[in-house]
Amino acid sequence: MSSSETQAETPAPAVIEVRDLVTHYGTRQILNGVSVDIVEGEIMVIMGGSGSGKSTFLRHLMALQRPTSGTIKILGQNVWALSQKDLFNLRKKLGVTFQGGALFSSMTVGENIMLPLYEHTKLDRMTMEIMARMKLEVVDLAGFEELMPSELSGGMIKRAAVARAIVMDPRILFFDEPSAGLDPVVSSQLDDMILRLRDAMGMTICVVTHELESAFKIADRVTVLDKGDVLFVGTVAELKSHPSERIQNLLNRRSEEAEIDADEYLRRLTGDKLEAEGMPR
Amino acid sequence: MHGDTMNDGADQNARLNAAQRSFDWLGRSAVSGLEELGRHGALVGESVYWIVMGRRMGQSVRIGAIFSEMMEIGVRAIGIIGLMAAAIGAMLAIQGIYSLKIFGAEGHVVVGVAFSMVREFAPLITGILVAGRSGSALAARIGTMKINQELDALEVMGINPVRFLVVPSLLASMIMVPTLTFMSMALGLWAAGTYVNVELGISLAAFMDQTIDVLTVDDLLHGLGKSLIFGILIALIGVINGFLVKGGAEGVGKATTRSVVQCISAIVVTDMLFALVATL
Image 1 (cartoon, rainbow over the protein chains, first blue to last red):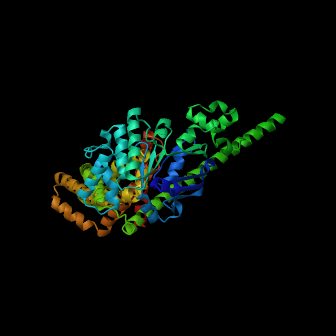
Image 2 (cartoon, rainbow over the protein chains, first blue to last red):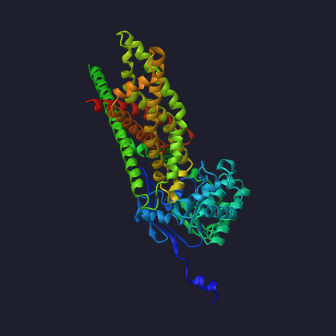
Image 3 (cartoon, rainbow over the protein chains, first blue to last red):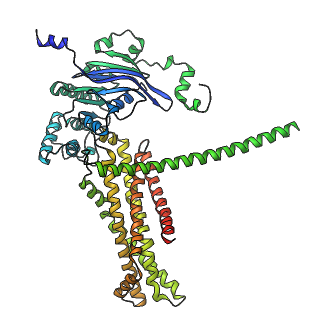
């Protein structure tokens, strides 16, 4: 029996298990019972249009926001049932690259990358500097340690943020809109880097994006969210051939605004204001 | 007749609505004030928790960060605070001599200057200047970090933002505001003594001797105790306004302004309450 056959018989375990996730902002429900599994070593792309709830979903996965109900298990641990100390320890196994990079503007690139090591390990300064340089080499930014974030381009900031996210060798890496604000060439380079990270370091990667091209290039599986519901979970090929009109609209960038009736449009504009004032919606 | 009744009804409704709105405003203001107070309390509680429990949680407060904040809040403010304290000391001496001359008692100016400077003006001017300089900077720094998702980044890296950002600023402020106040007292008294020496011919040494005779340890503790409270208030108000920033650059601007206004108001009101309680 070949090793690939053995792999095919034993599916990789889920490192992230989301069950019946419900979230509200005020009285408005954002996620309506989302359930998704992300298995070890895959690149899962979360897609959806504006207001689909994908950014909120990512904040839940990063344990930055408590849901109204439902459970999130990361590496087998129920995130919101953990003590503060256990949550800190779990977070050491996660890496996050934010949309704008979120590098600390008062620190150099090197200091930014060394910060998690400085806070969580007892390594000496020289070892931390060597590790930071190694991670910068992984993202093709070797030699940029002494620069301030304000001296970097948009693509460089994203790559430096990736270097910081992987400095603790996390098991799961999250990306929030990695292609946002980048030109197609830089965006494609970033996609290649994400694939390299998965292949070379065996990380599980979860990417939230609305860039179809990027999603098709990197995704092992795709989750499509629509108005707080999971519309689709599957491979890119399955997504492309899916008969659902909503999915095809998303893939072909067709707007659904024309399908909304006037009442629904007004409700979206005014949100809960009318309801709060006791007016019929 | 019927029309009059309708008009009366409309007037009554308008009056009721106005009263309702006033109560509504009063209620909302009270709730928002309590909420703000609660946030301050929670932040103090969380800061104390990290100071005490940080090491056990594997997240001790970095001494280097405290020193860095002390440099920013205290050492870099020495020049301007020293200048202001000296100016106020001289001003007190000028006004004191001018007023006391009326009674021919200008020789007693040292009593007024010593009490005013140590108990009142040194803590007040130091607090106001640190609020304008560091309270606003703290709100702007944390606010900018919030809109750039740097606070989220800290959280997901397993670094508690209160322990990392708030505790060093709070401790630095608690150490540096009383230290700067002590410096203000000394410089204010020196400037007053110098003016008195020129104007009345009383030597600086004699002025200082009289000052030490007049003042008690209680007076010194009164001024320093007040400044400690001012230090806590400045750090907390700056930090909370930073954490509450919403929107972009405009939100940071608003938070910065709000922080300065709240800090100065809190300092003046606390000063008055402290004086009232201490002199009862």
